Length: 149
Image (cartoon, rainbow, N blue to C red):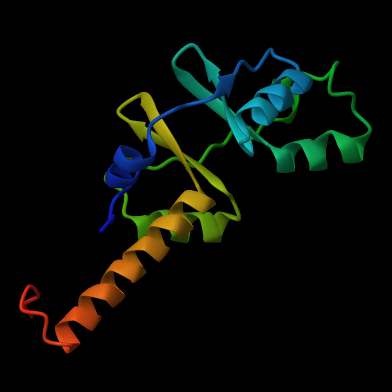
């Protein structure tokens, strides 16, 4: 069962997609489209300075009649990024996402970003954990000798 973000990253991978705060919004959208992701980290070197999501684009660019090829990521990104650590539990991550109405959490260990998890990653892990538990309980109930209480 996957109980921590570290276990989730070990399974899904630790790939990080990012842009610079000086990149255009258009470039950020290109990266998100190429990688089929809903958000990119905004990095200055190895330092996390923000996150830019499809929601940021819709609310802060389109609705305000800004041009994506002329607007910089720094002007639209969310700078106050909520992060988690590899030791964070799946339940804690889900609670943070729900409480703050966010869909992506950068995973930081020390000063270094080591991965990103999305709400989809968390939901998938919860479903897998529930399926594992159901299977375990079914085997216990049917008396499978390989299962102990």
